[in-house]
Length: 265
Image 1 (cartoon, rainbow, N blue to C red):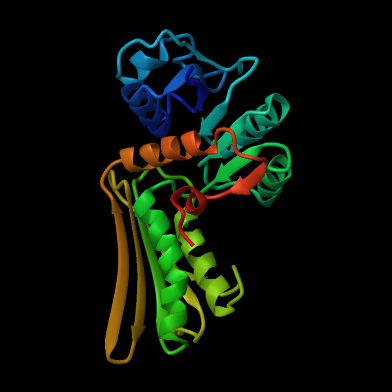
Image 2: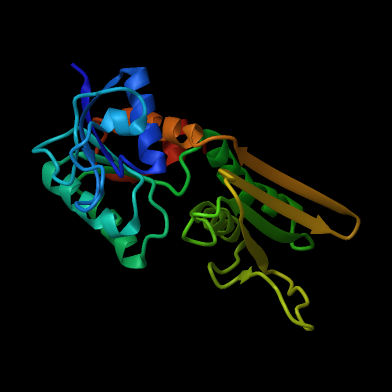
């Protein structure tokens, strides 16, 4: 018997790909596709909205009585409702929504005492390898190497810097004893914008339809090392989320990460 899956934000860019790839894989039973009550596609077949053909599940704003796992890549305003549902129904939660408030992050931690949760700013397998590498590289190179993070996304992305850029910075700070977010410098301007030692520059580019590019540059006098990850399509995030959902089902209540899913130390 297949595990029951709910896709939240199912009419959004990410939600459509998650639903389509879930249908293609055929490993999970999609029992609900959730959207905001005022969404114009409410009542339509979620598969048709996603462009994958009918799945006999209509877009709805009401959660079903029970599910095994929920994947949510919607908006911060919708996250509370999803977290509350999962806690009340004991469903596992894979949450990839970025731009959450500190209060919402605390709510996730509280929920993880009752249900298994994976919260990640980026579900890409390659990006999570980069998350693991940057702190180690920063520690090996030492204090004489300046660190700059540049992230690029499409023109429609609301939050900046990206959650992934912040995760990269946080991992570097954790490995090198820097304060987070106190060590971050967001862009530079003016006649006296000289780099301060120990800071991490973070820069956001918004242009066209860029899916996601993250670069971390370590530079000192005489050389530069750059680690880069480029997402060619949203499928990389959707496939990672589905992989996480299948892994999470049946796990004990706790707050997990994609590093746990991938077995990255």
